Image (cartoon, rainbow, N blue to C red; front, side):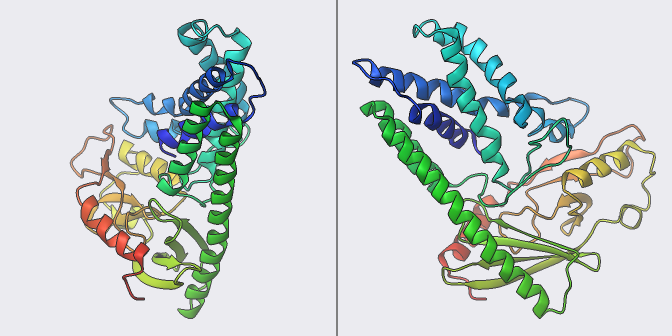
Length: 342
């Protein structure tokens, strides 16, 4: 999820497990929260693994080894070692105390990311699979704000019980996301059945910033169908777009299979779990059809762009699409508020 959410969840766990008493308790809980917060954000430093020549390198390493369960003790130790020299000694902590607080925060990161839809390599290096529960968006204010307030209030009042309330809220919200996910999936299956489709595979995931409206995507006969679903509250299905699944030989007949661009397409297809398609708005771009700001549209958040006149050794170009974000947010809000009829 976003760095703030990762940080406040990382802060909440060491605060909630604090068992000390005395006149310095408020101070100690604030320190526990600060180190836990920094530990909770540290795993995303993998975004710094980039290359000036390979635009897809960050896709390979993001949510990889720094997010694995096996790396938690190592990551916590590294963060604790650095922060002990920077902060821990100044705050009169023992080395093991700094490492423990940082490790508690670090441990929350991968587990929370697994609840989102981008996929996390939890079992690296033993398994190269990205795990995603698809029960919460990568940004969700209704999850983050109450949790952040509980962490802040726990530090101000010196009461670990307030941080525990924040953790309970986080678990309840994730539980609500799972509940919504199950219903959305049932509705998506029913929608496909009503169309006479027998999907090869089907996924549902929350739309940006909420768990009210969900995106359904399924594959049938070499085509991806996307729709918006409102489970439970004002239950509705808002039918959406479709796009053909990527076939590199068909869609880019000029591309040599031995070229670097062809290899980059293969890497992108692997990252997208096979949900790759040609961008309907630009035939030189390949998109991940799972992600769009408006859930029932094929409107990519990012893509890779090919060039027919590129050299065999040239890479594709990675492109982020934010130019229509304000307009798309308006349409998303209409779906969340229930102002769009099925």
